[in-house]
Length: 207
Length: 207
DNA sequence: CTATTTCTTGAACGGTGTTCATTTTTATCT
DNA sequence: AGATAAAAATGAACACCGTTCAAGAAATAG
Image 1 (cartoon, chains in turn brown, red, blue, yellow):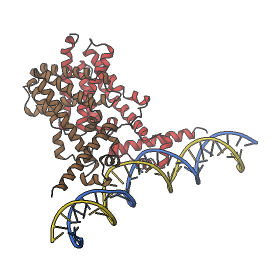
Image 2: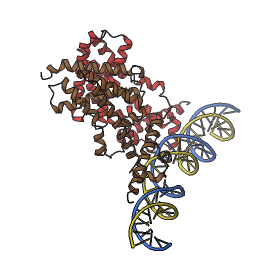
Image 3: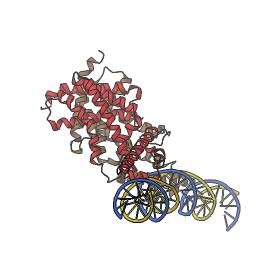
Image 4: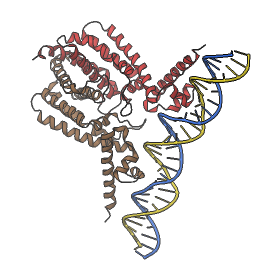
């Protein structure tokens, strides 16, 4: 049996990711410690560095899993919210807020984690984020048929970032953030304002 | 002379804040080290802890200074952008983007820094953030005279957070962020969309 | 069963923020 | 001014962190 090696290696990686996910969910990204995670995964301290290059890379794998679940939630909301583009955007915004609230620490880890100075995010993980923008392209292109593909992608990033900013400041508990009790309502109001502004603005943009 | 003690103490605090500001500006908030900052301030390692409770508290003082400068920039933009509320909001958004770009690391430090689990931000520093919302109340109340004061404050926080999100993801260099080259244009487009949506939405909100 | 290769282990390393006994400086009192 | 008391500055020492690597354990091949 020559594949026991690879199987054990994969199992170790899996156990480490699971343990890291649990640690981050419970203590935040700053509470992820190499010793705690290896103990919980049932391996030696050094084993972490045979499975992953780095603690940072382990975090990236946790984030990849979180993004996968978040992507599913958004796609599901996009499927259910079939009607006007405005309804689709509202459904996805709601799903985004719900996911962030239900997976607070893991969601925050997606955007709080920073690689050390000079280290670039690996390409495989960059692509994991793409879904956050892709789901917006459809409804946005209906709302703004005047925009070219390039401008549409930019506007999708901007739209995502706007909603994201409201959720982030709220969940981080920042002083300037919206209180959690009003988060759903305020995000809904923002999306409504943005869709209305787009509908009306569409004609004038060409000047 | 009995005030030499307090003068020296104040001078030490000032030197430490200045050194910390320089370190953060050059190496980011993660590059702020107690030994480097005390060396640059010309004092012993332990002196830091006679002047401030903590490295975190030193960072809060740096952030307070940054917020003061940012507040001035926003107020100045509000004063110059006298015309329609839409113009005022555009002027302040532009000033916000300009400030963030010109003070990248210090601005990022405002929102990336997190206190350890369980430690609450002191009240004096919470109030330092208030200006970010206050400058929006005026133009927003003109744009939405239908909203009560309470709802207006909420909407101001949401509006700020939306613009903030776009700037943050861009300056952090996140994959889903808007490229820096398009940041000004996209923020301007977002503010325009939001103001148009508000003007049009104002009547319908009561249902 | 032995020899060889491969992987796993955890003590050790360098670097971090923070503390505290010691020294040095400052203020007070005759 | 000099002696004494109070206060503050100092930096070695501590606890904890991520990461490495010589040594041991395990798996594979002969």
